[in-house]
Each structure stands twice: as structure tokens, then as C-alpha cells.
Amino acid sequence: MRKPIVIGNWKMNMSKQEGLNFLASLKDFDNSKLDAGLAVQSLVVDSLSSHKNNILLGAQNVCYEETGAFTGENSVLLLKELNVDFCVIGHSERRQFFNETDELVNKKAQLLLNHNILPVICVGETLEQYENNLTAEVVKNQVSIACANLDIKNTVIAYEPVWAIGTGKTATSEIANNVCKLIREHLATMYSIEDANAVRIQYGGSVNENNIAEILACSDIDGALVGGASLKEDSYKQLIGY
Ligand code: PGA
Image (cartoon, rainbow, N blue to C red; front, side, top):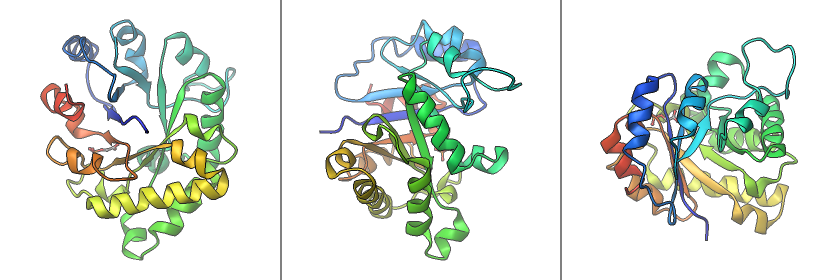
């Protein structure tokens, strides 16, 4: 049985005090049935880290090198020192605005695994690719490169169709499940069926408190990566069943 994992991606939102208040309201969260996480801005990781209790704390970026002359980047060593549990990599916004490639995502995933930080590897097709029936090809190609030669069982993959992010358009649960299944089948060819069955695959893109139950009920979807709806305490609590 794969334990579901629901992650809120705060992107470039929330002040330090808002983050502290948010975590305070979640202090009694019981993670026995579901893992819940929040991916926050790097600048507040240190302040929030000692208040996370059972909420997994995540970063939204990490440098592909451990340390050195990389101005403006986040070191995996510091993420570890600050007790970061996971890091989102390959998000479509980072691919689109910061040129994050599958090769880079793969390096970052490797580095995170070396330091026992869970990589949440995002993949997904653009609207144009979706409309041209290229979803399977694009996603398989992303997985082939971004997920190559990893301790794959200890990663989370997030399937996020770019056309569903922040648009209010959710992929139907059938489409989402089919793509997550395809990712799992592809991982089985890269690794083993056993390993592929152990990987948690999330769906992301306009998930909210009203549609999450249907999404989590799908056979190959093991959680959700949620942007907008994770910014409100009430919605987030409903998303994680608190
Ligand atoms: P959204 O964002 O839930 O606001 O669509 C999802 C994401 O970008 O991870």
C-alpha cells in the first residue's frame, strides 16, 4: 500500500508570520494515514522548520551542486541542516521561467537522494502538446531523463499538466489516472515492476477541497500537489483531511 502524500506548493506567497500561524493551526496533525507537506520559500525554511511538527517541510528549489560559487542558489547541505524533508524539482514554472531541464532535474534528484531529502519530481505536457495528442510521448520522455538511475522508490513524481496549473481546468480523474498509470508502467521498464509499484505519483493542477477525493480515489494516483488551494488554512485542512 502506498501512503498518500498531499503537498501544498506555496510558490512565491506567504509571509514568515503567515507561515508560522498556518503551521500553528496544524500542530496536532496526525500523519498516520496520509503524509502532508508544504513547499515554502527558502527564506522562511529556517523559521518554519522548528514549528512543522508532523507536516513535511519542503523547499521549491535546490542547486545541482552541493556547494561553491553558485550565487543565488540553495545548497542541499543547508536544506539538510535546516531539516527540510522534501524539495520540489522540475516544476513547470521553473522549466518555463528558469530553464530547468530534465537533465538538471535528474542531477538535483540524485543530490537530494544522496542527502536523504525526498525529491518531488514534476512532469507534464503543455496545452499545445496536449492538443496534439503528445501527452504520452512527452511525459515518457521527461521521465526517461529526469528519473534515470535514481533510487526511484524514494522519490515522488508529480504529474502536472501545464494547462491545468492555476487555470481552474483540472484534468478529468480518468485522464489524470491514465497518465499516472502510464508513468508507472514506464518506470517498470526503467526499473522493476516492484520498484514502480512503490513510487508515489501525485496529480497536480487546479486541485481543491472539492475535487481531491475523486482524485485520491484513482488507482494510480497517490496524492496531490496543490498550489492555489493550499494557501488558505481551511482549504488546506480539508485537502489533508485534518
Ligand atoms: P494549482 O497549482 O493547484 O494552483 O493549479 C499546482 C502547482 O503548480 O503545483
